[in-house]
Image 1 (cartoon, rainbow, N blue to C red):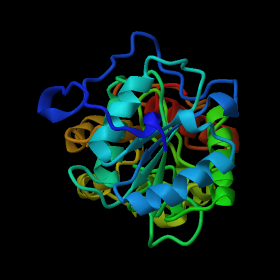
Image 2 (cartoon, one colour):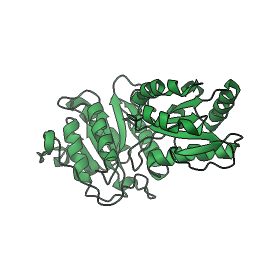
Image 3 (cartoon, one colour):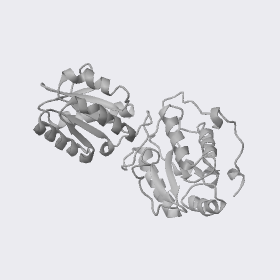
Image 4 (tube, helix red, strand yellow):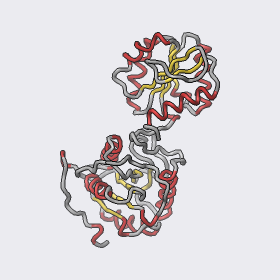
Length: 315
């Protein structure tokens, strides 16, 4: 397949990984320009047969063969991503990662990439695609892989399936409006339907009202946890922390701010809101936002938006 597919030795950083390129400029995961002719593919696949089948499918989908960087494992894929950081940040990168590879598999590679994004080590943020023989079509990842991959594709894949991947990448690259998880300046993914919401109020009718209004905002009702006492919140937060998604907490009283903050001290995912008398979703010391007791749809929407901005770093 030509010299562009020869895996070249590269310098290794601490722990044997390729050295990172530290971003001196703010990363821009959603540029405003899309040009398929400049898009780069990092294709990690250890099986020669699958590579021979897959590379023609990628080129048939419209990608220049010289723009495909092939790796035999996740470490080499990270090396290629590292090399591409010196390129134009307005040109998209797609990483196609096989799940089973020696040295470093696709899952571990994707996790490393997410860590790089979160720490600000990437100027050019890639769209991460899982390639697996157990998948039978192009689609979004399941709950377990949602934090690592943006999309899944079967193995081997066809040119038509590659075109679908490129279409999804374009939507993500330009505006992130295809429903897929998308990278943010913090590297955190915002997906309202996957976040945990805790509604604490001594009045069941008040809890029910807020839970109903939250579901109308897009919150998954199965993710809403109701409790009547603040003492229950710590355990719920501990359990929800494992999801890696934000935890939105609504409290009944101002006086409980310190207690709940202490209960959530080990969690960086908690966003605490106090329900109070008065108008507007203002901010009070000890809370990330407030919500009027007699809130309107716009008030609740404003709180959810504040949580999103906090979680994604303003994206």
